[in-house]
Image (cartoon, rainbow, N blue to C red; front, side, top):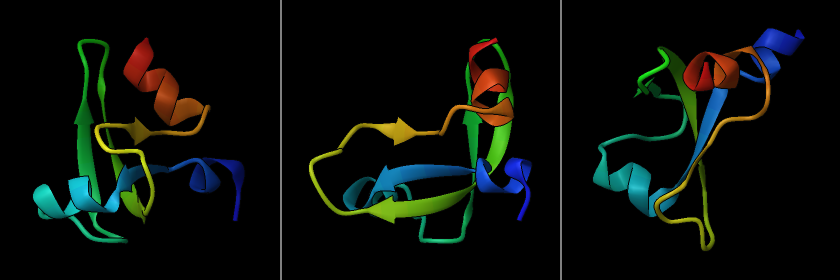
Length: 65
């Protein structure tokens, strides 16, 4: 697995993912004023409701400009 693949995911709270109709391995479209990316979904359990985590890298950079 190369760096681009390793950083190509968005982590969502499992409850948020369920509310959005998403599951592990699904592809989600993330859009900001700076750009958009399609990333694989990873769900997490815990206290992260309302947060979408994208690791630092080319995909996060595309979203923040």
